[in-house]
Structure formats: structure tokens, C-alpha cells
Amino acid sequence: MFAFIARQPILDRKRDVFAYELLFRDGKNNCFPDATRDERTEKLIAKHYLTLGLDDISCNKKSFINFQKETLVNGLPDVLDPSNVVVELSDTVLPHDALLDVCRQVKNTGFTIALDDHKLDPKWDDFLPYVDIVKVNVMQSDYDGIAKSMPRLLDSNVKLVAEQIDTQQDFEIYRDMGFDYFQGYFFAKPEAIKQQNLPTSKLTLVELMGVSSSETFDIERVNSVIEHDVGLSYMLLRFVNNPMVNKRYKITSLRHAITYMGEVELKKFVALLALANLNDDKPIELLHLSLVRAKFCDLVARESKKGDNPPVGFLVGLFSLLDAILDQHMDTLLNQLPIDDDVKFALSGGQNDLSIYLVLAKAFESANWLKVIRIAGLLKIDQKRLHSMFNQAIVWGNGLRQSVSPHFPESKV
Image (cartoon, rainbow, N blue to C red):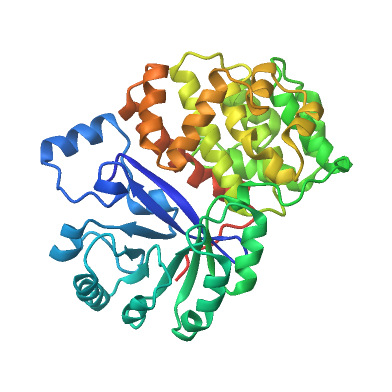
């Protein structure tokens, strides 16, 4: 069970999530924590902070994990399932020959092995018969060098991960080159900025998002829009009856939902419902990331005693990737979206409390622990409390993803 952790998605050629790389704050260099906590410490963490298992963190996907050299030499923990864990190895952990011995041992225990941060040096050819995946940091290797090495790597029958893919152009370049998987936040960037106006169907969804950001709630308007859209009606009922939201009652209509949930919670769900429908032709991870940010920023806003009507923390996290979802400039979208001024200011790059919450969420996503510590001090919130909130956001996002997505890809084998 882990209390302090971050994760970064690894997507396939179709931009579906294949796995998550896990980064541990309580381990050296973001590695799997080696030291075993005593029973008293475990009970303390379990009592005060939400802890997660690998399935919770990785949403039933594979987990890429780096290990400290002591763990590799002494043997991997028995609690890890070889069918779900990919062991990352690099030359920064052990000398070449010692690492090769570890590679053979790990392979014999049934784990999938990824050669991390591959420098394309021929000395690594010794490892290719034993590894399943090779990760190449495209920012540390020139394009011509990677292209020249591709035939050798492809002949080795390994899967290839391109790391540090941060633009759609890079994704297309290395996908066409032959890479199988891609790590980086390229999917969270607009593919190509479109200047044309949004179609009427999407403007209706944007209007719903605006209603959620108002202090008043036009139930008649929202009810009319949802009732006339079979897909929205289905997703609302599926969403509001999700056990993560409602464990007791069967909700049968929007009016029933507002009676049961209350106006503020329903505003969140209507905004989420609209965003999910806008995301129909985008990677599901883009919506998933929006969900986690929304819940985390909402929890931080509550902790900071920020007003919740409208639910500004939730909305700033949820709408933070709207430019990537609609392939338009954020400022252009904000001009069309009648949302709370503080939310609009934060999303447009302004500095206020809400923008700090968003920066904090991004620090967790990138495992920038120093920034987490600095912002925790600024907000006067205990760091461990913030980790608990982020863990809670991950669990909530995992559960809600199944309701707002028309499909929920199973774990890759």
C-alpha cells in the first residue's frame, strides 16, 4: 500500500492507455520504496492518509516501476504480480555486467522487463535477448541516430516506447518511425488550432458547462437539453448511479438527481457530463486527467475554505484541458463560455488561488515533489494531507471514468 505516489500514462499508437509509470516519493529517486515500514507506521498511514494498491493507481493497467539496486539484487517483493508489473532497468542503477545478471534473474521470475533511458549504444545489444520493451528518450537522442538504430531494434523483436513526447507532431513522427508506445503529455495539447466556430451541438454542451459555473441553476434549461439527447440522458443516469457517487438510491431523472444530490454537486456532474461528450473523438486519458484534476482541485479548494457555489475548484480542474479537447485557443473558448470570473482568470493564465491549485495538480502529475512542498507551505496545508487528496482524486477518477466513457478499455495483456 502506497501513500505518496505519482503516475504518468504510456499510450499506444491509437492513443489508448497501455500502462502507467509509477513514481514514488517515499523511495529514492522516485523508485519503489525499498525499506519496509514497521507495523506502527503502516497503521498510522492507513488511519490518516488514503493508501493505494497498484490496481487503484494504475486503473487495472500495467505498472512500469523503477527499483533501487538493493531491491534488484536482493529480489523483487513477493507482493508484486509479474503479469501486471513491468520492471524498468537502466545503467544508472548498476554496472553493465551486474545489471545484465539482474536482467536474467528478473526475466526468469516471469516479469516483463523494460530497458529504460536507452542511449542507442551498441553495448546494450547484450540485453536485447532478455528485455521485452526498450524506452528511448527522444529529447536525449537525435532523430537521425534513432532512425539509424530502428532496424536493429525492430529485428530484436522488442516493443519500443518513445519518452518525452510532448507534442502531437512528435507523436506522429515517432509513430511513423515504428514506435509502439508513447510517454509524455502530447495528448493534452491541441492537435491543430482551429479558428472556425464550434458547431451547434458543441455550443449546447458549452452552454451546459456555463450553467454549472453560475451561482444560479436553470433546472428547466438543463432538463430540456438533456431530455432531448438520448446519449446525454443515458450518460447522466449511468453516471449518477455510479457507486462512487451514489451507493443507496436508484436515480431515474435529472429532477430526482437534483433532489438527491443537491444543486452544487449536480452542477459538477452536469459540467462533467458536457465535457465527456465534447471528448468523444479524443484519447480517453485526456478526460481521465481532467477528472483527477477536477476532484483534486475541488478537495484543495474545500480545505482552503474556498466558496463552493459555483464549485470553482472543481471547474478549474475540469476545464483545464478544454483547449486540447476542442483544439482551440483557451482564450477563444473562454470568450464563448459564461463561467465564473475567477475560474476564467485562472484558466487564461492569471495568478490567483485557483491557478495555484492547478499548478499543484500538475506538480503531482510530474512528480515534482519540491514544488509540492513549496505550494503546501504557501497554502498552509500539510503535505501528507495533499498526498491523501491526490490519492482520493485518482480513485474517484478511476471510478467515474467508467461511467462517462462510452467504452472502458480492459487491461492490456
